[in-house]
Length: 136
Image (cartoon, rainbow, N blue to C red; front, side, top):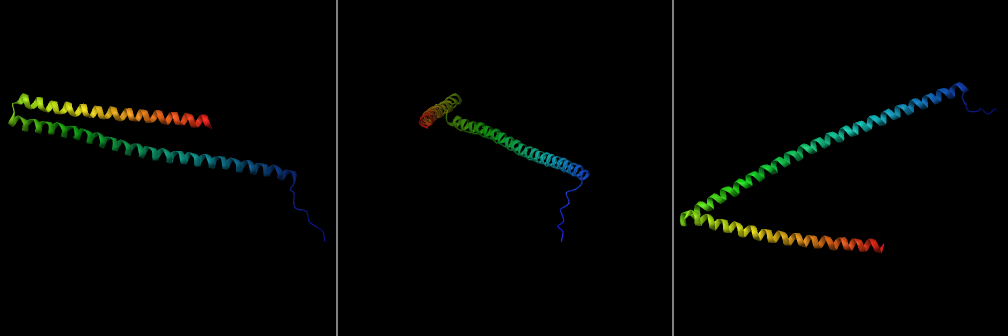
C-alpha cells in the first residue's frame, strides 16, 4: 500500500489562500468596527436618556425650592399678621426680625462648628495617610 501524502497545494493555491486570509481579515476588521460603532451609538443613547432624566429631576428640585421659598414668605406673612393683631405693626415686625436674626446666628454658629470639625477630620486623615505612605 502506498501512503498518500496530504495535498500541499500548488504554488498558485497559496496565493489564493493568502487572498482568502486577507479577505477574512478585512471582513473581521469591518465587523469589529461595526460592533464598536454600535456600542458607541448605544452608549450615546443611554447617556442622552440619563441627561434628560437628570434635567427633569433638576427642574423638579428647582420647582420644589421655589415652592419652599413661597411657603416661607406666606408663613412669614401669616405670623406677622397674627402678631399685628396683638401689637402695633412696627413692634410685630421688630419681634419677627429678632427671631429671624437669632435663628440665623444659631444656624451660622452651628454650620461653622461643623465645618471646623470636618476640616480637623480631613487634616487628621491626610496626616494618617502621609504616615502610612511613609511607612511603606
